[in-house]
Length: 175
Image 1 (cartoon, rainbow, N blue to C red):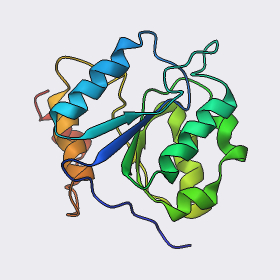
Image 2 (image 1 turned 120 degrees about the vertical axis):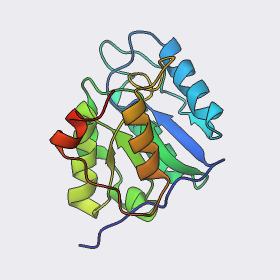
Image 3 (image 1 turned 45 degrees about the horizontal axis):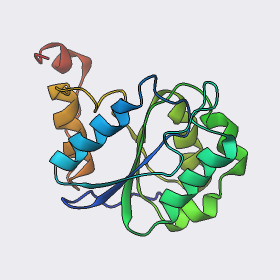
Image 4 (image 1 turned 135 degrees about the vertical axis):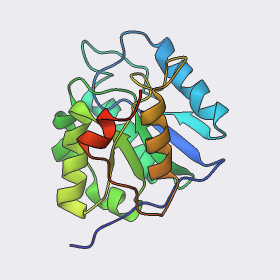
């Protein structure tokens, strides 16, 4: 299977925001994260259902799936950032239109419960995704962790091979 590598993110690109798992405890985190991305010069579109709540999930399975498909189908969107992990992404796996995702490879970012989506994208269509900061977990704060911020943006905005960071190097790096 061919590996699908999404194009790098450029200033002014549109980043789509989705909630395929749990909703944040505080919805203002989504707005704060959007403000952070806009200050960096990106356009941002929050999916129609990204701020929904249904128990511990960010909406019904159909709503969360609809947002995922919408963002992959939107030609303007260059990257998709997840709001948070938690629980629920695995419930979407057998419903995803993998053909749509394959035809529209994009930067896809998240971790925790989002890993189930990332592994399915890799296994089924070869899409390279990114275990990285999420909107309502990492990017809503007044100060984003410097190490995380620097390395993340370096990876998604460059085509150069990233420097490998060993545990020892990280221990010597002041956070």
